Every structure is written in structure tokens, then in C-alpha cells.
Image (tube, rainbow, N blue to C red; front, side, top):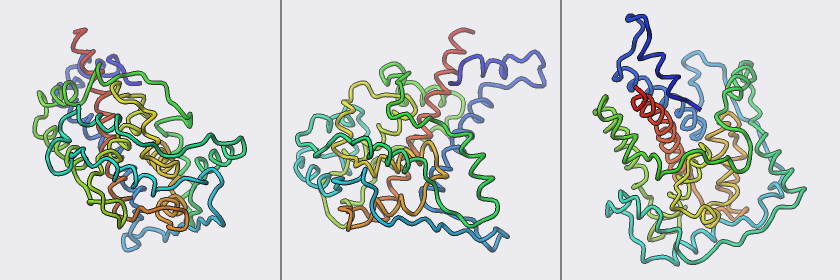
Length: 314
């Protein structure tokens, strides 16, 4: 965890030539948070290097003979049914998604997705899925993957211990305002990108039209933030299982914690109709962008909290 002391050595350096201003520090923190989060976007979208740039040809040869047993009875169509049951909540295209209270409203909606406890064998299968990565045919792949995994942001624990609550330090009321003092233009761009991603909707799930997709978007957002040990304390996290299947949670967790492990198998589990999936590629793109924005904001919340603590102790 980043602490105030980590930042203090930069702005309080005894050597004036090495001393950073708060504006320079805020600028650097935004660049770092954005650059680190781009791995999520790149791997989540399946981006590869262009051979025209001299890159060695890369192909993902990962295959699954059958769906892993841990994903049995996970059906995206149940999510569609839940969304169709709750037509009274209108957040799409009305800017009400900008109201934080509305973000949590879907936690009280009726209905539930059928769930079950995984057996020991299925838990072991789930661990294998989380640890698996793409079979990549490129000489440099193993070296690059090794370095990336050493820098993984989180462990593979199922439920990371929460260390910060939204009521203590939030993006809207604390982090964004602090950044605006020093880099207002950059902060405005980040805040707008973040909100636009949450407001955007394809108008359905896959090829199925639904009135409101806000619940599934908020479930993704809150799940990613929880991986960073940051929790929205007014939200009941047991509700995330209503709108996120295990396949979706595995994809999101890999994107956040181990992006180099994303393979074509992870994509196939989200979009294969034979596995009860109704998502299409635009849905996966939107999921990846929500993950990217949530990850960047989570990083900025933590670093600005450290910056706030540093200022308070000055």
C-alpha cells in the first residue's frame, strides 16, 4: 500500500533540485495509474503487436475440449431475466448514473440468480482456470509474462480484505477534488471518461434488448474496486452474484490481477452460446473498458489518499 511517507520523500527532498511540486507529483501519479491500467485494456481487447513494426508473430493456441466443471449451471440468460424484471429503475441516458445513491439502488432489486456452492473438485478446477494462461508461440512471451506476473497487483485470494471504505474516501468527494487543485484539465478528462463509460449502454445484453443495464455495470465496477481492497459500504456485495456469472468474475479478476493470463478460452467462456452465454464482442469490449476505468480510479483513490494524509501531517 502506498503511504504518505512514499510521497513525502519526493516533495520534501533536502536537495532542491530533486524536489517535486505537488502539481508535478499529481501529474506523475495520473500517468502511472493510466499506464498501469492500460494492460487491462490491451489484454482484455486481445491487442497484439503489429508484425509491420518488427514484432515476432504471436498466436494464442489455447483450447478447451469442454467447459470446466466449475462453470456448470452458470447461465447469462438468468441475468437478462433479472434485468427485465426491474424495469422501474431508469438510469440509462438520464444522467442519473451520476448520482452515487442511484449506483446502489439496484442492490435492493428483487430476484436472484440461482447459485450453488462449488465442490472441492470444482474449486480445484477454478484454481486451475485462474492460474492458466495463453499458449503463445513467440520466443519473448515467457520472459515478458514472467515479469508481468511478478508485478501482479493482487493475490489470488477469493475475498481481499477491505482496507478503505467509500464513506472514508471517495472519488467524487475526495480524490477528484484533490487532483483538481493541481491538474484540473487532466482530472476533468479522467472524470468524464470514467462517467461516460458507466453511462454508455449498448441497449441490451448480446442481441437481447433490455431496458436497463445499469445493475450489471455497477456490479462490475464494485467487484473491481473490491479487488483493490476498496469497498462501497452502502452496497450489499452478495448482490454481485445476481448479475455476474463466475465466467465474468474470472475474466474481470484476470484482467485486474493477471492480465497476461487472459486467453482465447476466457473470451470463449463469455460468448459461447452452447455454454448458455448471451454476451457478444461489444459487451466484452464494454466490460474491459469498465474494468480499465474502475482500475485507474481505484489506483488514484489510493494515491490521493496518501497525498491527503501527507498534507494533513505537513
